[in-house]
Image (cartoon, rainbow, N blue to C red; front, top):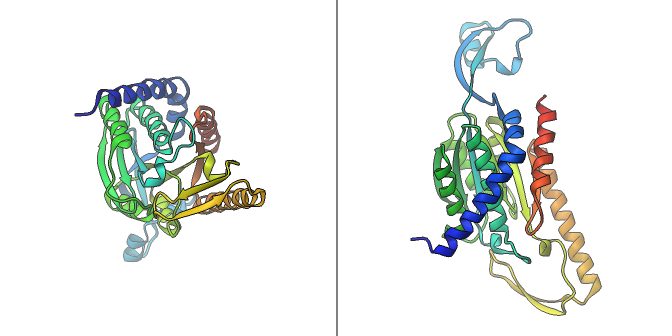
Length: 292
C-alpha cells in the first residue's frame, strides 16, 4: 500500500500538471501530433509527383516497375514516455529533484495525450530496462504512470540509453511518439537514437540540476557520483576550480545538445526547481510552426 503522504504528493502533481495540460498544451499538442499515426494500407504503382521516400523497393525489384507504399492516417496515437530512473535523478539542490521534475513533465505530457484521446505507455530504464507499462487510455492510467515514476525502486544505478531505445524499437510495431526524459549522462547512444527517430517521432526532454552546471562557494566538500559511487574532495573556494567546472559543464551540455540535434531530435531543456511551463509552451508553438 502506498503511504498517505505519497498519495498526497501524487495528487498535488496531478492537479498542477492536469491544469497546465488543459490550459496551455492540449490544443497545441493536438495541432502538433494530429495525423501522425499512420498504418500501412497497400502498395500501388508509382505516379509522377509521388514522394520517392515511399517507394517499396522489395516490390519494385520483384515486378520491375516502381511501386510505393500507401498509408492510412489513424486518429489515435500511441505515446510512450521513456523515463531515466538511474541514481543521478535523485539529485536536487533545491526543493525538487530531477526525478520529481521528470515525473511532472511526464504527467503534463500524459494528460495532454489523454485529453487528445491517445494511448500512453511508460518505459522506465537505468542501464537496463526496469519496467514497461503498455499504452492505455484514461486518467486512472495516467495516475498509475505518475506513481510509478515517483516511487519505482530501480534495480540498477547507471544509465544506458541504448538499452531503452533498442527495447522500444522491438516493442513498438507502429509509428509512435516517444518522449525520452533523461539527464543524458551517457555515451554511445547516438546511433540507436537515430534509428529510433527514423521510425518514430522522438523528442528529448533533457533534465538537469543547477549544481551540475556550477559549484557554490562553500569551502571543502565531499562529492560522490551517484551512479558510480566515486568519491572526491574538492575546495569550492578555489575560483579557478569553479570556473573550470562551469566551463566543462557548459561544454558537455553543448556537445549533448549537438549529438541530439545531429540525430534529428528536438530537445526540451528543463531544470529542477525552475518553472518549465513556458519552456513546454514554446516547444509546442515551435513544433506547430514546423509542421504547418
